[in-house]
Length: 157
Image (cartoon, rainbow, N blue to C red; front, top):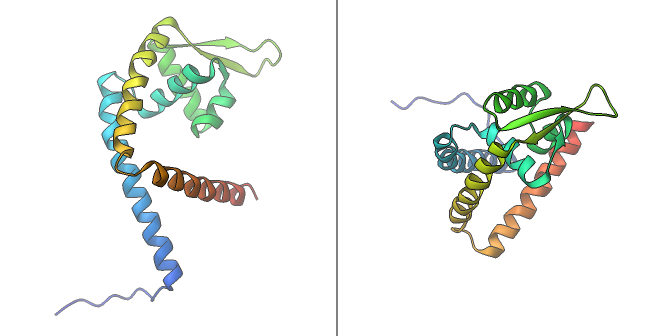
């Protein structure tokens, strides 16, 4: 005998949205799993890599700006920057115009590490995304940007 479900029927729109959500999460999880192995080879977590990458491309940043760039909580950024500082990869500097703010910047050791790791990551990401054509990649990017901006605007209300 086959068990019966007690969940109420969902509309086609809700089914479609739920399927998209599951597929999106599974794709992100699979891609991140592929990339995490590389971070771990260099003794980095995903959050540590994201901070190093932001500083590599943007230069010194206030910790609040780091938080916005990589979507970590304030406490998460502080904790992760502290760990990177302990590893000698990042240093903190006082902000001359705001005593509450701190700058994060790469040390020479951090610059050397991310300068080595980032190009490898970029190549691996290119390979992972190559299953989609250039046009498909652009379309997915546009669609996900629209979705993300809408969700961000709704959560700001």
